[in-house]
Amino acid sequence: MSTSAREASRRIPLAMVVIRPAKLFDIPEVMRIERESFREAYPRGIFLMFLENNPETFLVAEYNGKVVGYVMGYLRPDLEGHIMSIAVDKEYRGNGIGSALLSEAIERLIKRGARYIGLEVRVSNENAIRLYERFGFRKVKRIIGYYSDGEDAYYMLLPAEEWRGS
Ligand SMILES: CC(C)(COP(=O)(O)OP(=O)(O)OC[C@H]1O[C@@H](n2cnc3c(N)ncnc32)[C@H](O)[C@@H]1OP(=O)(O)O)[C@@H](O)C(=O)NCCC(=O)NCCS
Image (cartoon, rainbow, N blue to C red; front, side, top):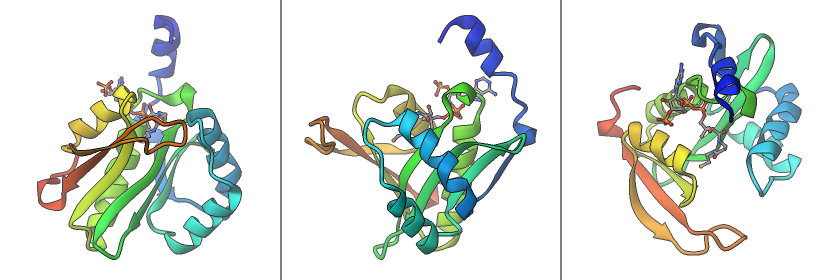
């Protein structure tokens, strides 16, 4: 991103960004952001099923009536709160929206009994890894060939007792 584009994209006051549970009508915007953010996209049915099963931990960030980011978290039976996906609209990155989404998802998962928060991230995704490390996540394992294009993932974990809020 050029310096001026970065400056322009950093004018969003976080106080005007609302983090709220996703609704059915948000799914097309969530899918748009997912498609521009990832090489592999989930089919619509996955989002619908996820929403039905995890209505409190599938969250969107809304700014001026527009969905600008989302996070999909769920509680596994082994009490790991797992972050399945998180992305922010390219135009709105670097404003703290990703951090706000992640923070709210972690809070909600811990309230529901999560002992750890876990996620997988591409080893090349330095921005996301830095964000997670700032939250206290640590790389605990490298999963060889985790992604369909052969790239490895880091499995990262944050113990609930180490979470003090962002
Ligand atoms: C990872 C991702 C979700 C982060 O979203 P984001 O909204 O840009 O995240 P934040 O703004 O909270 O933090 C990003 C950076 O902006 C900085 N920042 C936060 N608030 C800021 C503000 N108000 N003004 C300026 N900079 C700010 C942060 O310090 C951070 O910098 P860092 O590079 O040192 O970590 C986003 O980059 C994205 O969608 N990436 C593509 C999808 C992806 O990779 N998802 C993760 C898959 S595991």
